[in-house]
Image (cartoon, rainbow, N blue to C red; front, side, top):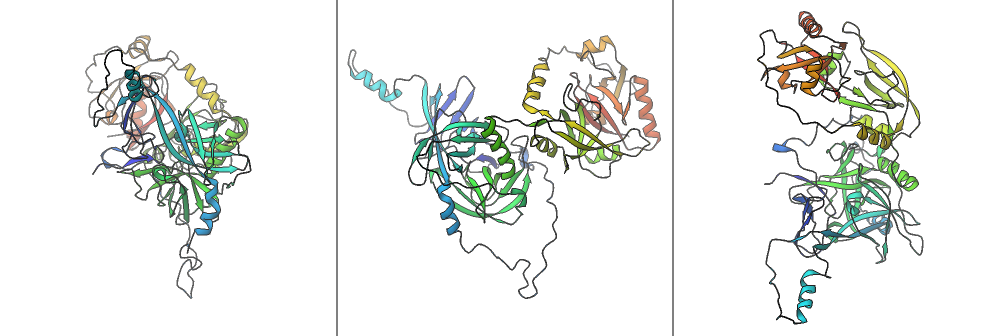
Length: 552
């Protein structure tokens, strides 16, 4: 059986099976041969998230926080005697269905080619016959060379009676025309208010003649694993479809974007459900259905929804500004592993390790240092390095926030909690500045590796920084430290991805400036009985990362 794929539940194309290629973007899309089938990108459905190789887990998933169960009822013996399950959701579905819409889009795709299948015979009329123009129009559409109109369907929901509709960005991405179809048969053209590819959300505006039925966002943080939820959407073009399930998990990371924090549900979600709401039993939107895992494209009970609190912040900004204005701290982060926690003497494997500070960024004020571990930000706990960017992005631009970090100033000193304050910048401005500062990579000259001497340390040979080495390895002019000039194959250093040309900045949180200094510090760690060496290393561009190398 084919490995499971992440699929977004929208792409519903027209009845003909077409092979579509965009020459400008190098994208290939294939439409399925059914009445409302989905076209694909790069051999899969557009928006499909590639599955992990060799049946590996999707991503490391932290176990959910344990919550003490309610006391067992002495009479019934049930831990939750108030409700075994919803007897019916008919009243709830009837109340909410009018606010859920179907979204159809039309896109003109250039450079299309016919799909593999039964060949269409070439129709030719006698020379000079007026029928030839008719045949050409019949086979080529409206005389539009190398173009096809591709139809797709998705879901959405109204959050404002004036005509504000929320859906997924991938539902309306690259569309030339967007139509919102209501349960009563009304069809209205929609305009894009704003999109956010990072969270895959889009806000649309229609102009109704009368106020529309609307729904409200709920508090997704209060949703518990096991709570009943209901999805309404447009699977496979079958509008107004209601499915019921439970919340299977929270905080899921499926590597779809930088702010993954999905609600997982077993409520049936299929192609065409993308952008539709996930309701709690009070009728509030607690999620926006976005992706599924499936080997076939149909529901197998593993679907993912964007949490309402994350979506609400994005939707509010898109409505107010037409674009996102996220907070920006200006840090390069690294996950805290067991080895790093041991090397830093941390009490637990929590927080976000600071591996670099963006020059002229908000955090470049001397208060936060490389090697700090951020544990709290603006009063919120930071569990992992993936949590901090999302929390920062949700914080208003220009706000002065308090940050708690764990810091170890020396090998023989315990970690200390240090409180600092940083005024946030705007992420979008920071991304532009970083992109403009990056130089295109130069052609790397081939360097014959020198034989590794017997005196190599941890499988590495060190050298002082020199102009000749900077030229050989194309190191940044301002880069300082100790240069790794050779790495033994199958050594501990090679296993950690260290290569010749890497620059060692610190060992055990102490700066090194010469090769002798590096060798001395590593020898001391061995003498002290340390099992690992925590090293701060830089690549040729100066980007930093922490590496833990086992000491033999």
